[in-house]
Image (cartoon, rainbow, N blue to C red; front, side, top):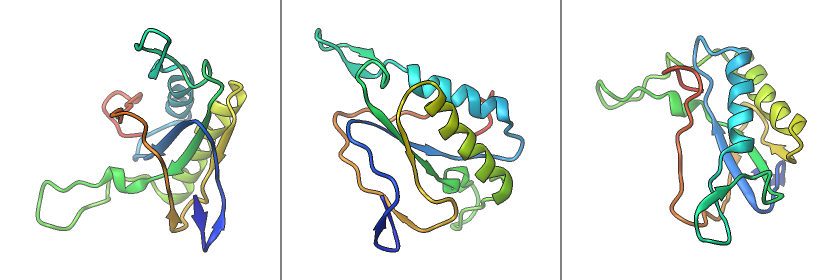
Amino acid sequence: MTVDGGPVGTIGHGLVVLVCVARGDELDDAEALAAKVVDLRIFIDDDGKMNRSVRDIGGSVLIVSQFTLCADVRKGRRPSFTSAAPPDMAASLVGAVANGVATRGVPVASGEFGERMLVSLVNEGPVTLVVDVSGGKVL
């Protein structure tokens, strides 16, 4: 990932996690997301089954703040972002997710909150998941 042409977050094998913080999300939600990300069994084992976590494979996690996931496009043609958390709260909770991953022993890299980032990834396999740990809220 780069900002203004310079690298800010790089990982090898692992997960890219786009984090959207919505109004009403709390520190407990960030902690729950970090725990889920670290232990979610989505990597292939020797039998070809999704049975290993990012921790199991010795992988890393790239955390990217992505408020646009809060977009509401039900009306009109322009997305509404009113459900997104205010920037100061969102920055704090995105940081808490990254810290929660790191404290669980998984290397973590992050982008720069609020900056225009260029994210490149190689998506191995058809696995893209929405992880909602906040009871219907988006985080």
